[in-house]
Amino acid sequence: MLDASLVVPTRDRAQLLAISLPRMLSQSLQSTCYEVIVVDDGSTDSTPAVVQQLGCKHLRYVHKSSGGGVARNRNRALEVARGRVVIFLDDDAFVGPSFVIEHLAIHRGESAIVAGGIVQVRQIPAHIDESPGWRAYHRHPMPGGNSSVCLAIIRQAGGYDESFDTFGWQDQELAERLMALGVRRRFAWHAPIYHYKPATYDVDMRLQLSRELERGRMGARFYSKHPRTLVGITTKMWPPLSKLDRLATRLFSLDSLATSILRGERKDERFPEWKAALLRAHVEIGAGRRELESMSRTT
Image 1: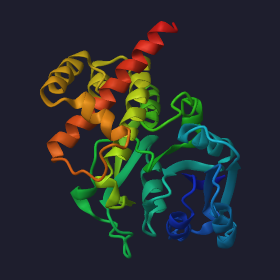
Image 2: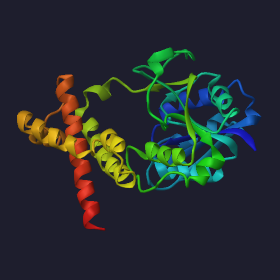
Image 3: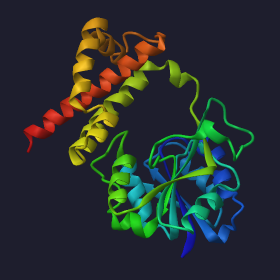
Image 4: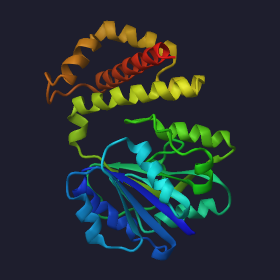
């Protein structure tokens, strides 16, 4: 068995993968000790050629002809993984040469969910600072962009729930089940990723709200499986938050504003951050509420 399997889902991001993947393949750890599994969710661009051109023996390519969401893609990788520890990454994550070693160091002492730091960047970094300190810290128990867990334990937990078929919450839901098995959380201070998010994302409110529609639906599924107050607050499915949202909607006409943005009627419009945050929360809460109502009708 290898020491580690790095799992990288991707779809139609060949240009980005061509830059991020070589860094994942160039670790201080010997290449015979780990593998990188790229799970291609039906790309129509040059993704297969990018992987083929790299031509590394410790690079494996799993191609799926149709979609199904990141949870399903990661489960396909778990079926073929050969590493004692599985490390989850995204295709827009840039890592330093000690990344894998730092994750493995924590797993030698105990069975844990290890979350690594995340530094948001607007440009692809030329150099990776592997000790970014508090600017990389977060409270996410198991971010899909930088986390690890022993393969045997994640298989014992049943892997990812594939009903989480769009954006959001599939990682936290799996973490809940892992922690129920007694697995503890740990933070890898010296295994950060630099998460590339272009500046255009910040002004594309339509894209942001579309993501919140997906996040709201998946949040409802998460809360229905784990109906604890903390989960409800985290996913914004806690009933008092809906009351606050209704008040904000009346004060700021959030319904009509969100609808016009999602229809593409208001493009390239900048909003104050407080209003953008209210819009994102409103769309997420509304989508979650509709999903909970739909689930109650079918049970």
